[in-house]
Amino acid sequence: MMTARPSPLSQPLLVNELTQCLFQFFRHLDDFQYQDMVALFAQDGIWLRQGQTIRGREAIRLALEKRPTAQRIRHVMTNAFIANMKDGRVCMESYMTAYRHENPSAYTVPVISGPFRLNLVTTWFVQEQGLWLIAEQHMLPEFNFEQQ
Image (cartoon, rainbow, N blue to C red):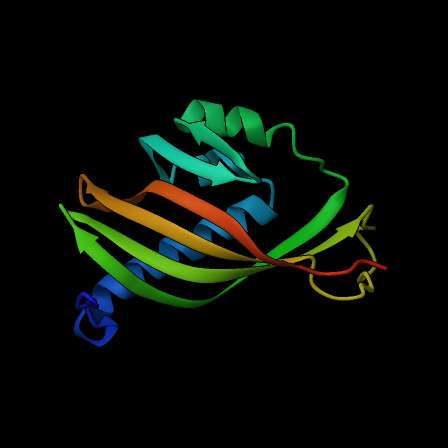
């Protein structure tokens, strides 16, 4: 039996707020702005990233500081929709396509062979003090692409 899902058309402001939060999250990640990115999580937020579960803002920030900085990476988010609403939390599902180039020059546009990975991103949001924050996010690979 299928359960009824909330229609995004009936929740346009909510969809917009959550999508903007998600877009900001990945933009901050791409720009290595970890403090701004981590601030989008609830204090006890959970992030399943690259097979590892990270709990809490400080642990997330520390994990990100291990990330290589000699790369240019861009995350492109698509197909975002509200998948579930339960107990004051809202779940948004989307696809994330990652593009990556190692050792970029600040003065050139890199040439790459194609995307690096496609992930299914499931993000649970909770509202705290009038702001939607990420309570839990799972990024699970759907496809890895051959790199040349």
